[in-house]
Image (cartoon, rainbow, N blue to C red; front, side):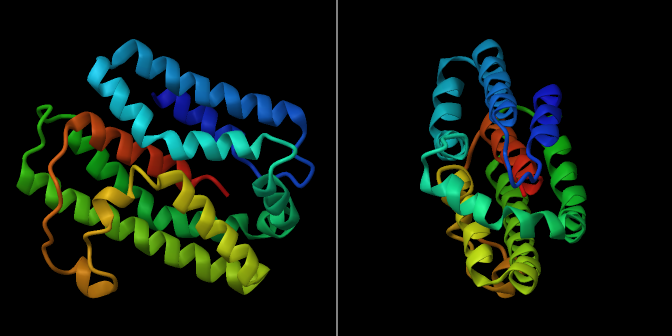
Length: 206
């Protein structure tokens, strides 16, 4: 999985021209993760993987389709996006340590994280993810305008619709929700790994 993550990070770079080889490499990264799931997951885990990553896979497919509205909209703003990479990285670095810590500790535990532990870790990762979105939106809107910021929000929403939202929608909006305990459904270590892994990949998307 670390190898696949490195492929994603190397591939997901700004390019206003977006040449065909980049689309090919992006599809190779997706195939890498799919092969990992096929080889290492049982049937139930593969079904969860397919369900949770459906939105991200569709977004990547649209990104590589020359006829798609999403691709055209992205390329319209890509030149400005490329000017904010350093600022975007600073937003990302504020949250990566929190995500990596939760992800690493989860992999050392049993398959069932336990409801209390999972609730607390999910609350932390949802708050981190929400703060990351606020940070990047403010930065993109200031440099590239509201339309570009809306597109950035749309990218995250589409990619995480079935993975992040089921766990984070119960968290109250605002900083108050991130300072109080909140009940979140229980899940397996596999689903937690997918949740953390996809968010880590999306942090590097722009």
